[in-house]
Image 1 (cartoon, rainbow, N blue to C red):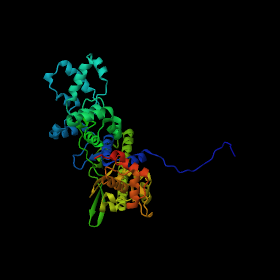
Image 2 (spheres, rainbow, N blue to C red; image 1 turned 90 degrees about the vertical axis):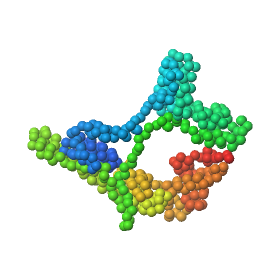
Image 3 (tube, rainbow, N blue to C red; image 1 turned 30 degrees about the vertical axis):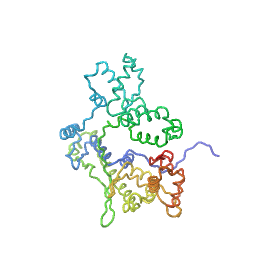
Image 4 (cartoon, rainbow, N blue to C red; image 1 turned 60 degrees about the vertical axis):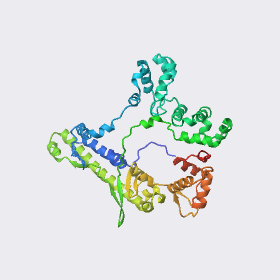
Length: 441
């Protein structure tokens, strides 16, 4: 082995991760909304780049965007009346009969409300709160009971058991005593559906326990969720698939994207200034050109990927989601002669509008499941649909086990799936195990 030091020439080919290449990759994975925000921010940095929205007045990047925001707020003042959000404390205090409470009670109640978590539970120890506020513990408990009488029912509980018991007493008073005993003394075995030992200990039937279970299922373990405030979420598709007499067509939904133009007037005004200004303008011109090129490249790549998806998932558009065929990103990348990571970035958080509804592009990619025929495979989505239908139609007194489902799919559908795969798909669908689906009627 020659270990002598020396100098050698070697020619290698490497991909340099330039700033422009990084930008092109970032733009590809942006959704239409993210891309619009990116371009608006770029316009604030680059005076040569003008942004003009299709349905909005032209935007001057040198003008403070707060003026535009203020004008919109004035225009939409009617909608804002209904959109005003009240705090949890305001909503609870508004239900109290203030005149019937002393100043000390109101002080403690406000403190307790301020220490409720996002689910409506009191997480702090009541004894510590009493010491902190320098009031008797019994007085603090009385104040907490006042809160527990407010809407939504169950608020102010110290744990899940207490939350459910408060709601049961209000919603199902006729069955409260039995439910109280089960939740207080047998909470864990009740949740795990180990009901036979409960029935034996309390000398009651499984049907009675089932009745209590059904009542508890209708309760809300997170009372504050009812007070939640959520603005409407609008999905903006990045592509549109339409059915025409000639077949399926694909077009990019570019309406949301602002129009980019070059500020020629600004460039002509300052291009012959000093050397520093000229260098600055040269960099901004290059930045503007790279953005245009990256946007066009993003559009071209996204169009090719969506077109290929539609081409391979024609059955989906003709018969519906149950006809989704197996398809992987690697397969699409191979046919388009691009890298798999490019496909992954292209479909990230993007939606396509179809005659059947709006779907995420990622939802069209499913793994391959073997069938009895061997040469005719099915997709994981079709298997999940088959599992859901089987469980929906099963005898709830004798629910199907994962092994039963696997054998049924093999015999009736010709789909070869292991018991563990059934358990995984069932978990993804949010379907509990057979022991927890069993009913005692």
